[in-house]
Amino acid sequence: MKRPQQLALLFGLIIFALGLAAGILGHRLYNTAAVNAADDWRTRYVNELQMRLHLTQLQVDKLNDILDDTRAKVRVVKDKYKPQMLDIKQQQIAAMKSLLNSKQQAEYDKFLDEKEEKAKQQDVREHQLEEQRTAERRVREQREQESQPAK
View 1 (cartoon, rainbow, N blue to C red):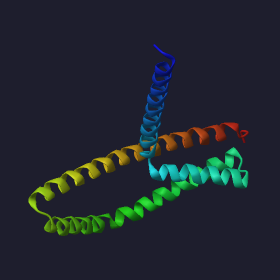
View 2 (spheres, rainbow, N blue to C red):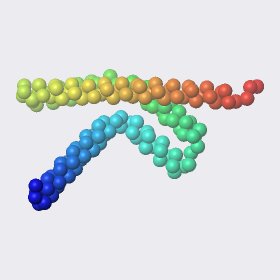
View 3 (cartoon, rainbow, N blue to C red):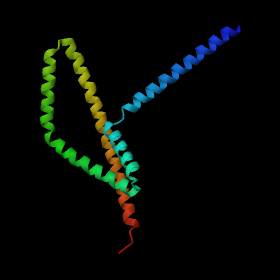
View 4 (cartoon, rainbow, N blue to C red):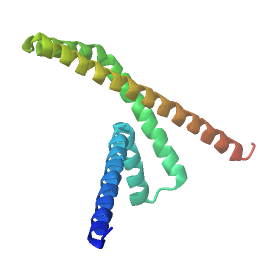
């Protein structure tokens, strides 16, 4: 092969490799974005407070306990008005379907099913995180009790 052809081949391979790397990076970023938004907020919130306030590990643990308690209280309130919210949602769906033709309604039903599946997956992730935090909290509390001198 002549030198110009070798350079063209080399540049072609470099461009291909860069495109492949960009595709992999884009896919990875897209999948990372699917992480629980509430948990992502919590992580950023705790990290920012830890850096700005120079919290000790014990303070971070207590902050996480406070956030867990707050989440539980908010869940109780949400559960109280959930039936009303579901009724409003059903009214919205009915109103939306009245605008659509049969083909659009079928696609809208598919869209709703996909959203429902994502919501279920999110609920499972949140439940797993909650169980994990509860287990960590119990272990931490047990260590604290063991480290206290016997009375």
